[in-house]
Length: 328
Image: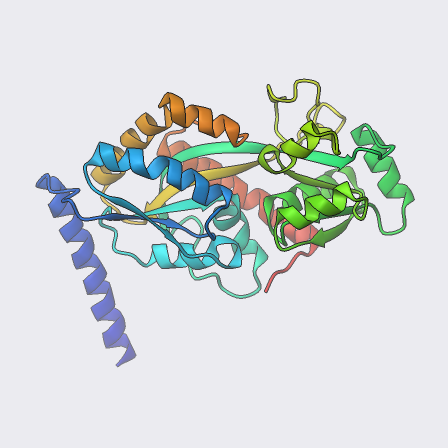
């Protein structure tokens, strides 16, 4: 009985894929039916904000509605699993991130419901943002070397906040710990806001986060930037060195946002979506908003994004294993 059900399911998936291929071949995609843009995080976060910038312009370009659907939970895994099971017909888009598509599969002790690489086809890298390592304004630490020396000297290491286990700020901390051979104490919070306030107040020694989160507090003089996680300095903070420049050669970490569709989506749909998304991302107002988020746009082709994603999966699997990080 179970074998029969599996065979019937396989036939249904094959039939749906064939129907999608035929529909596009006949020039009937999109038909005017709404496209769902799945955001696997609650409203208000970076992925949601980016989706609300892209969706209206993409809807105009495709001539069909693009409707945002927020399904948060488990670091993006809940919404991603739902999207992975959608028909591969071009009517489901997924806003994937460094967490949902390169970290979660190695992080969670229970299955996340999808394969981070095999369950999806990449459309476009939307942008990437380096993180800033910050300390309280009154901290004696002014360089990365100061931070590493202080952490070696403190029992348990310096405390570093993050918006949760497995988030990009947490992974940046673990990558630094692994490469520098220094111990830190990770303090996970439910969101960046409370963690930032505790760094400002001196309850935490430091934290990593995007310029969108910590930038206003740097400008107000309540936080001091120490270093940037990306491979290059950013125009907004020209005097802040990268971690690699500060002595940890090869250190490179950015928090990225990308667009995916379910695996087996027709190649013609993927090609059209990539072309239209790239046009949207090139619009001056979209570029301005991206820079406001602290993100750098990307012109990666889908194949390049796939190769990058695979490298990220391997990279974070090694960091997670070395630090013995687990999430339920």
